[in-house]
Length: 457
Image (cartoon, rainbow, N blue to C red; front, top):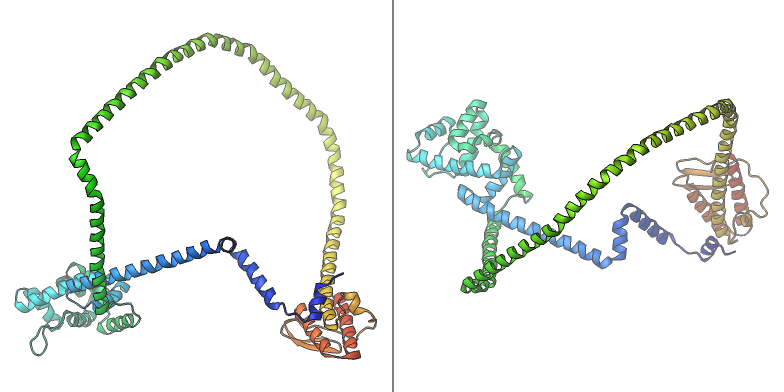
């Protein structure tokens, strides 16, 4: 008989890579069966689907960033701040429960109040700035940037009581100011540090990126205008044709409507002329059959009642006949169950024991095939164990890895796995020569016998 394990051992073939690949493929197929089978059945379709998803994701990301950069740039211009300040500090504000839009509105209102306070137009805001100790101009008298004023305002807010923060925010930042209290109350240091991290990570929009976004926004607007022009060029001839022939088209519509109404009227008259008489005929037939049906039911009702009574009586009779027999058999069945129960339990235990014996025999056969491959015998247990008849004094295996002691043969493995032990033994035997190889094989077979008998495998 051809033995594949022996042939592989004699030829020195290494199929571990193939085996690993097949096991990996089987594992993938079991976890993602539809994905694997669809890809294998239609690789080009599956690849096209993947490329489509990648393309859609890239397009979505590209459009999202370009439009966001354009919008942030326009929002920053309207608020009078840099786009990097708006997007980085806006991220800090969002983390504190506000929003970029809220920050933009607050900065716009702050810049307006700063300008009007300097011009003397808004004395209340000027008094609030002075009370908070926030300077509106630098040492040379030039108006400071709204961003610098914002950070000084944050340091002032950090020192205020909660009610004072509400009044100051509403006065200087408008309706959006109340939403900025949590952000400003942190102080300028934490805000700047957090914003710097956002910029470093690429989460803010720079001036150059905003400029690119603005160009893209203009380009997108031009593309939309071009598409609208193309649509108009396609539609206008049809509109022109309808306009030039409006009276004729109107006449056609009117003629069609009149013809449709006339046809519907004739159809309804036809239905009425045929359905009406048929309905009257059905009413006449029902009127004639009603007395007959009533008579049949009157005659049949006693028969049906008698039949039901007969069935009930038969059921009671059968029950009275069978019940004594069932009562007599019941205790016998109970006794039989109590006798068979222990027997069936022992049979089940015997079955489990036989299963373990078979499992150990399979493991023993696997071991001996590997050793057979090392010796070049090509057979299973019988071929390797031929001539072995002496017992080896003592044997033990240590679980979990380490030194595996098989009497005179000692090998070191990473874990007490039967495959790994057998492979290590095969290697040691294969390295021996002559009578030493046969002696080591016989000793190992004896060890296997002891392991099987002792339940070690």
